[in-house]
Image (cartoon, rainbow, N blue to C red; front, side):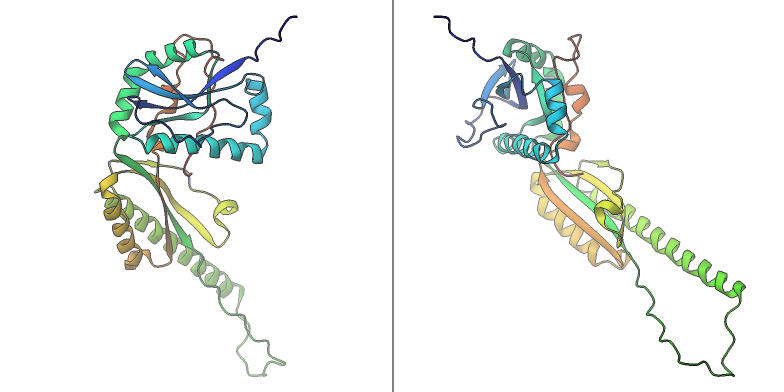
Length: 290
Protein backbone atom coordinates (compact mmCIF):
# COMPACT_ATOMS: atom_id res chain seq x y z
CA UNK A 1 0.00 0.00 0.00
CA UNK A 2 1.53 3.31 -1.10
CA UNK A 3 2.11 5.88 1.61
CA UNK A 4 1.21 9.50 1.12
CA UNK A 5 4.21 11.73 0.36
CA UNK A 6 5.47 13.89 3.19
CA UNK A 7 4.17 17.44 3.00
CA UNK A 8 6.58 19.88 1.38
CA UNK A 9 8.17 22.47 3.63
CA UNK A 10 10.00 25.76 3.21
CA UNK A 11 12.65 27.08 5.59
CA UNK A 12 11.78 30.32 7.36
CA UNK A 13 14.77 32.23 8.81
CA UNK A 14 14.19 34.47 11.83
CA UNK A 15 17.67 35.62 12.84
CA UNK A 16 21.40 35.01 12.53
CA UNK A 17 23.77 34.97 15.47
CA UNK A 18 27.40 34.25 16.34
CA UNK A 19 27.99 30.79 17.72
CA UNK A 20 25.43 28.18 18.58
CA UNK A 21 24.81 29.83 21.92
CA UNK A 22 22.37 28.58 24.54
CA UNK A 23 19.28 26.68 23.48
CA UNK A 24 16.15 28.64 22.74
CA UNK A 25 13.32 28.56 25.32
CA UNK A 26 11.31 25.33 24.87
CA UNK A 27 7.99 27.21 24.86
CA UNK A 28 9.04 29.45 21.95
CA UNK A 29 6.88 28.28 19.06
CA UNK A 30 7.60 30.41 16.01
CA UNK A 31 4.90 30.63 13.33
CA UNK A 32 1.62 28.79 13.68
CA UNK A 33 1.59 25.48 11.80
CA UNK A 34 5.37 25.25 11.57
CA UNK A 35 7.77 22.77 13.08
CA UNK A 36 10.02 23.33 16.10
CA UNK A 37 12.61 26.06 15.99
CA UNK A 38 16.12 24.85 15.25
CA UNK A 39 19.62 26.09 14.47
CA UNK A 40 21.35 25.79 11.10
CA UNK A 41 25.13 26.41 10.83
CA UNK A 42 26.21 28.95 8.21
CA UNK A 43 29.98 29.21 8.25
CA UNK A 44 30.95 30.69 11.61
CA UNK A 45 27.39 31.84 12.20
CA UNK A 46 24.13 30.11 13.12
CA UNK A 47 20.65 30.79 11.79
CA UNK A 48 17.47 30.30 13.79
CA UNK A 49 14.97 28.66 11.44
CA UNK A 50 11.64 26.85 11.31
CA UNK A 51 10.16 24.49 8.73
CA UNK A 52 6.80 25.82 7.53
CA UNK A 53 4.24 24.30 5.12
CA UNK A 54 5.16 25.48 1.64
CA UNK A 55 1.51 25.73 0.55
CA UNK A 56 0.78 28.19 3.37
CA UNK A 57 3.94 30.23 2.77
CA UNK A 58 4.06 30.57 -0.99
CA UNK A 59 4.25 34.14 -2.26
CA UNK A 60 0.59 34.08 -3.28
CA UNK A 61 -0.58 32.53 0.01
CA UNK A 62 1.49 34.96 2.06
CA UNK A 63 0.17 37.97 0.17
CA UNK A 64 -3.39 36.85 0.90
CA UNK A 65 -2.75 36.03 4.56
CA UNK A 66 -0.74 39.14 5.39
CA UNK A 67 -3.41 41.37 3.86
CA UNK A 68 -5.60 40.42 6.85
CA UNK A 69 -4.72 42.74 9.76
CA UNK A 70 -5.28 40.10 12.46
CA UNK A 71 -3.12 37.53 10.66
CA UNK A 72 -0.40 40.08 9.94
CA UNK A 73 -0.31 41.14 13.59
CA UNK A 74 -0.04 37.52 14.76
CA UNK A 75 2.79 36.78 12.32
CA UNK A 76 4.66 39.93 13.33
CA UNK A 77 4.31 39.08 17.02
CA UNK A 78 5.48 35.49 16.50
CA UNK A 79 8.47 36.67 14.47
CA UNK A 80 9.37 39.36 16.99
CA UNK A 81 9.16 36.92 19.92
CA UNK A 82 11.73 34.62 18.30
CA UNK A 83 14.06 37.47 17.35
CA UNK A 84 13.88 38.97 20.86
CA UNK A 85 14.67 35.61 22.47
CA UNK A 86 17.68 35.19 20.16
CA UNK A 87 19.00 38.69 20.88
CA UNK A 88 18.68 38.15 24.63
CA UNK A 89 21.08 35.23 24.34
CA UNK A 90 24.12 37.01 23.00
CA UNK A 91 22.96 39.30 20.19
CA UNK A 92 21.42 38.48 16.84
CA UNK A 93 20.61 40.01 13.47
CA UNK A 94 16.84 40.12 12.90
CA UNK A 95 15.86 39.17 9.36
CA UNK A 96 12.68 40.57 7.78
CA UNK A 97 9.36 38.87 8.35
CA UNK A 98 8.88 35.86 6.03
CA UNK A 99 12.44 35.33 4.82
CA UNK A 100 11.96 31.93 3.12
CA UNK A 101 14.03 29.37 1.23
CA UNK A 102 12.95 26.23 -0.62
CA UNK A 103 15.31 23.90 1.26
CA UNK A 104 17.85 23.83 4.06
CA UNK A 105 20.69 23.40 1.54
CA UNK A 106 19.69 26.56 -0.34
CA UNK A 107 19.16 28.40 2.92
CA UNK A 108 22.61 27.45 4.17
CA UNK A 109 24.29 28.38 0.87
CA UNK A 110 22.60 31.79 0.79
CA UNK A 111 23.53 32.56 4.39
CA UNK A 112 27.14 31.44 3.96
CA UNK A 113 27.45 33.76 0.95
CA UNK A 114 26.27 36.65 3.15
CA UNK A 115 28.59 35.96 6.11
CA UNK A 116 30.79 39.06 5.53
CA UNK A 117 27.72 41.32 5.61
CA UNK A 118 26.36 39.54 8.68
CA UNK A 119 29.68 39.96 10.46
CA UNK A 120 29.77 43.70 9.76
CA UNK A 121 26.20 44.09 10.98
CA UNK A 122 26.85 42.09 14.15
CA UNK A 123 29.86 44.30 14.85
CA UNK A 124 27.62 47.37 14.57
CA UNK A 125 24.65 46.21 16.69
CA UNK A 126 26.00 43.75 19.27
CA UNK A 127 25.75 45.20 22.77
CA UNK A 128 23.37 47.93 21.62
CA UNK A 129 19.62 48.49 21.77
CA UNK A 130 17.22 50.50 19.69
CA UNK A 131 15.15 53.24 21.35
CA UNK A 132 12.31 55.02 19.54
CA UNK A 133 11.79 58.72 20.27
CA UNK A 134 8.91 60.87 19.08
CA UNK A 135 8.37 64.59 19.67
CA UNK A 136 4.79 65.83 19.30
CA UNK A 137 3.60 69.42 19.32
CA UNK A 138 0.42 69.65 21.38
CA UNK A 139 -2.45 71.74 20.10
CA UNK A 140 -2.65 75.22 21.59
CA UNK A 141 -5.53 76.22 23.82
CA UNK A 142 -8.59 77.44 21.98
CA UNK A 143 -10.06 80.77 23.11
CA UNK A 144 -13.01 80.52 25.44
CA UNK A 145 -16.37 80.98 23.70
CA UNK A 146 -17.89 84.42 23.97
CA UNK A 147 -20.99 84.77 26.12
CA UNK A 148 -23.79 86.00 23.86
CA UNK A 149 -25.34 89.33 24.77
CA UNK A 150 -29.12 89.60 24.84
CA UNK A 151 -29.02 92.95 23.11
CA UNK A 152 -25.97 95.06 22.32
CA UNK A 153 -25.87 98.55 23.77
CA UNK A 154 -26.36 101.35 21.28
CA UNK A 155 -23.03 102.92 22.16
CA UNK A 156 -21.19 99.57 21.95
CA UNK A 157 -18.10 99.59 19.74
CA UNK A 158 -18.94 98.69 16.16
CA UNK A 159 -18.24 95.21 14.83
CA UNK A 160 -14.67 94.82 13.60
CA UNK A 161 -14.07 95.60 9.99
CA UNK A 162 -13.05 92.95 7.47
CA UNK A 163 -9.52 94.32 7.56
CA UNK A 164 -9.29 93.89 11.35
CA UNK A 165 -10.71 90.37 11.10
CA UNK A 166 -8.10 89.38 8.52
CA UNK A 167 -5.37 90.90 10.70
CA UNK A 168 -6.48 88.70 13.61
CA UNK A 169 -6.40 85.63 11.37
CA UNK A 170 -2.87 86.50 10.29
CA UNK A 171 -1.81 86.89 13.92
CA UNK A 172 -3.20 83.48 14.80
CA UNK A 173 -1.48 81.92 11.79
CA UNK A 174 1.80 83.57 12.77
CA UNK A 175 1.40 82.24 16.31
CA UNK A 176 0.90 78.69 14.99
CA UNK A 177 3.96 79.02 12.77
CA UNK A 178 6.03 80.30 15.69
CA UNK A 179 4.94 77.41 17.93
CA UNK A 180 5.81 74.90 15.21
CA UNK A 181 9.24 76.47 14.64
CA UNK A 182 9.95 76.36 18.38
CA UNK A 183 8.99 72.66 18.39
CA UNK A 184 11.26 71.98 15.40
CA UNK A 185 14.12 73.73 17.18
CA UNK A 186 13.42 71.67 20.32
CA UNK A 187 13.46 68.43 18.31
CA UNK A 188 16.83 69.32 16.78
CA UNK A 189 18.15 70.15 20.26
CA UNK A 190 17.00 66.72 21.44
CA UNK A 191 18.62 65.00 18.47
CA UNK A 192 21.98 66.66 19.07
CA UNK A 193 21.88 65.87 22.78
CA UNK A 194 20.92 62.22 22.29
CA UNK A 195 23.66 61.69 19.70
CA UNK A 196 26.19 62.49 22.44
CA UNK A 197 25.15 59.09 23.86
CA UNK A 198 23.80 57.12 20.89
CA UNK A 199 26.01 55.60 18.20
CA UNK A 200 23.60 56.21 15.31
CA UNK A 201 20.14 57.42 14.42
CA UNK A 202 17.49 56.76 11.79
CA UNK A 203 14.91 59.43 10.97
CA UNK A 204 11.47 58.33 9.80
CA UNK A 205 8.62 60.28 8.26
CA UNK A 206 6.47 61.75 11.07
CA UNK A 207 3.09 60.09 11.57
CA UNK A 208 -0.07 61.92 10.60
CA UNK A 209 -3.16 62.78 12.60
CA UNK A 210 -4.74 59.38 11.90
CA UNK A 211 -2.07 57.83 14.17
CA UNK A 212 -1.07 60.53 16.67
CA UNK A 213 -4.50 62.18 16.96
CA UNK A 214 -5.83 65.55 15.86
CA UNK A 215 -4.73 67.27 19.08
CA UNK A 216 -1.01 66.91 18.30
CA UNK A 217 1.43 67.25 15.39
CA UNK A 218 4.41 64.91 15.20
CA UNK A 219 7.65 66.83 14.74
CA UNK A 220 10.26 64.09 15.21
CA UNK A 221 10.04 60.33 14.62
CA UNK A 222 13.47 58.78 15.14
CA UNK A 223 15.26 55.65 16.32
CA UNK A 224 18.58 55.67 18.17
CA UNK A 225 21.18 52.92 18.55
CA UNK A 226 22.28 53.11 22.18
CA UNK A 227 24.89 51.00 24.02
CA UNK A 228 23.18 48.74 26.54
CA UNK A 229 25.07 50.24 29.49
CA UNK A 230 24.01 53.76 28.44
CA UNK A 231 20.26 53.08 28.69
CA UNK A 232 19.83 54.78 32.10
CA UNK A 233 21.86 57.82 30.97
CA UNK A 234 19.76 58.03 27.78
CA UNK A 235 16.48 58.05 29.70
CA UNK A 236 17.76 60.51 32.30
CA UNK A 237 18.75 62.89 29.50
CA UNK A 238 15.27 62.72 27.97
CA UNK A 239 13.70 63.40 31.38
CA UNK A 240 15.81 66.58 31.70
CA UNK A 241 14.86 67.69 28.20
CA UNK A 242 11.14 67.20 28.90
CA UNK A 243 11.46 69.64 31.80
CA UNK A 244 13.42 72.23 29.80
CA UNK A 245 11.59 75.43 28.79
CA UNK A 246 12.34 74.73 25.10
CA UNK A 247 9.94 71.76 25.28
CA UNK A 248 6.95 73.69 26.65
CA UNK A 249 3.91 72.60 24.67
CA UNK A 250 5.70 69.47 23.41
CA UNK A 251 5.31 65.82 24.28
CA UNK A 252 8.36 63.49 24.19
CA UNK A 253 7.50 59.79 23.78
CA UNK A 254 10.12 57.08 24.30
CA UNK A 255 9.76 53.32 23.75
CA UNK A 256 12.36 50.58 24.06
CA UNK A 257 14.73 48.98 24.43
CA UNK A 258 14.20 46.99 21.23
CA UNK A 259 16.23 44.68 19.06
CA UNK A 260 18.00 47.07 16.59
CA UNK A 261 15.72 46.38 13.61
CA UNK A 262 16.20 49.88 12.20
CA UNK A 263 19.97 49.50 12.07
CA UNK A 264 20.04 46.32 10.01
CA UNK A 265 20.21 46.83 6.26
CA UNK A 266 17.54 44.28 5.35
CA UNK A 267 18.01 44.83 1.62
CA UNK A 268 21.68 43.88 1.72
CA UNK A 269 21.10 40.94 4.04
CA UNK A 270 18.60 39.30 1.68
CA UNK A 271 20.28 39.86 -1.68
CA UNK A 272 19.83 36.91 -3.97
CA UNK A 273 23.43 36.89 -5.30
CA UNK A 274 22.33 35.43 -8.62
CA UNK A 275 19.68 33.11 -7.20
CA UNK A 276 16.12 33.23 -8.53
CA UNK A 277 14.21 36.16 -7.07
CA UNK A 278 11.54 33.90 -5.56
CA UNK A 279 14.13 31.94 -3.59
CA UNK A 280 14.38 34.42 -0.74
CA UNK A 281 11.06 36.14 -0.11
CA UNK A 282 11.40 39.01 2.33
CA UNK A 283 8.38 40.67 3.87
CA UNK A 284 8.16 43.75 6.06
CA UNK A 285 10.17 44.20 9.21
CA UNK A 286 8.64 42.99 12.43
CA UNK A 287 9.66 45.26 15.21
CA UNK A 288 9.55 48.58 16.92
CA UNK A 289 8.13 50.65 16.34
CA UNK A 290 7.69 53.05 13.53
